[in-house]
Length: 459
Image (tube, rainbow, N blue to C red; front, side):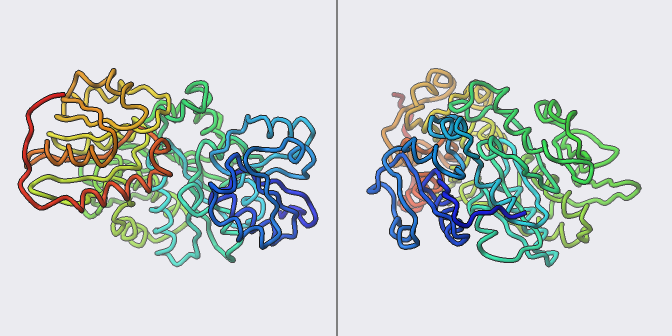
């Protein structure tokens, strides 16, 4: 049910991609829009495209009076829900909602929503590919890239497949997908949340409005996922890479097995372009909504088999002088790096570091000791990472990503791998993980095709 927006004063918080899309949409619904951001105008590109539409600006901070006199405040993903301007608005009785909530209320189509600490983007893309291959007009976006509000802007869809983050789930109200996928939960964003309990609770919000007509798709191998399963009122369908299930999707030998009632189907793992156990889990989770909706299994399976993987997620950039260079810039937390290292054979030169998110780096210790020969650290987190991991491999702190690539080129012998998998966000040195990944890939492609000079010294 669409909101009454015409003539209402709506404050949009955050002047990023989502804030711009919200502002355009709300002006199209004849709302009076004020875009508020803590950055000054000279730090924000493209503002003229909004002011030409009549959007007013509140930049260089958030003006409390504007928030408290608004009819509605809509928050972009990533904006903390406890900042003073939002708390002040709520205290005055002003409704505050997230972009994904507004889009949900405006968009009347069935939805598949995917969350988890790792694998969200890959799984969202896989679900979208399956539905599209089935011939369904399918919007794919959310936290993945294209804001959900653009689905409302663009036109008619039969399905929406949406990646949702814990940040987005903090401020939902009526948000209710037909299918909700929780892939896994490990330490992340502890620079935002007081502890794991609060982070897990935000993830669990995905299910609060679901009922018996809906379906929750859950990782049976993840203890934290299973701990939030009991209160879920939706039908529960599980997937597992470790054990056989009476119903659901599981890995058995070299096949994925789907059991639904009396039906059983098998899918050969060797046919997938995606490799690694974590990707098998993503594929299992992605197949379930399509199969339950009635998509022919051959169509769904072919769609996931053809998917080559996402940019910046364990992408082979280049093989140079017998060394494989992998861009895993999207590995922004420890759990993600664990999965990436587990899929490689030693020896590995690992480039890590960035903006510290407050998590524990200790879960990396075993794999670093086992597989990593050289650990090259950059960014704000470098010193803390060295304290936890520095005794387990030849460890060096470098001033830039360019220096790290040059060092990796000099240090890594034929037969090894170089992996950029930061375990940190990018915001200390780059605008986002995509920029970090693009720069890394270009630096690697620019390396001269000559024999490496292996330096066995330490620093």
